[in-house]
Length: 248
Image (cartoon, helix red, strand yellow):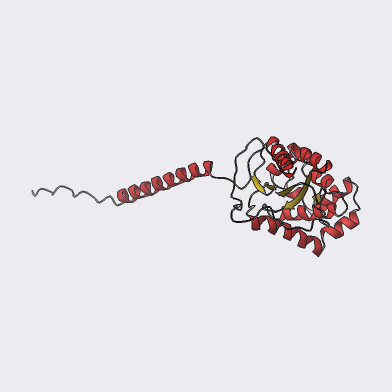
């Protein structure tokens, strides 16, 4: 009786395939973990938190761009407040969906407006609308409110309690309701909000910010110096006081 040859080991095709898949998965995991570590230390587009003094994005280098020379029609600009010849100038680049802008508006803006009232500071407000179409719509509404000398009242309503509204609260209908609440002429408000002139002004203000490198919000130019993120109030108070002394 002939002996049967020992069975030939079968080629297990799935082993190298499985090993290869595991190797690919491990490489991807390493890349993701590495990228995650970078993200923790890389600035985000939202700006620094209200208790942070970390600069969170690139802004135009003062050596490359004269940040003190931000062009605007100071005499007729409805988004500006304070004497045109005030010794100190603050340009604010903001967005109505930005939580850090809302926090800064609640925590720091009131003290800045005190300097406006004393004639020491001029604030020029610019919406850069980095969060999209809802922000742009809100910017048009804020501009329309400013044409009725109610910019700050409208601004405070949109940033009530130091928080931004959701996109569905920034529709034309919702914004018109806010205008009515603060006593605006809603017919004029609606007309101004939808006008070509307002659209052009909002686009120009946004372009001013992006041209200077204000790609995240809030970004500030105070006395020609850039400040990025919702830094503590003392940072701005000290900067204004220093700028005032420099003008004397």
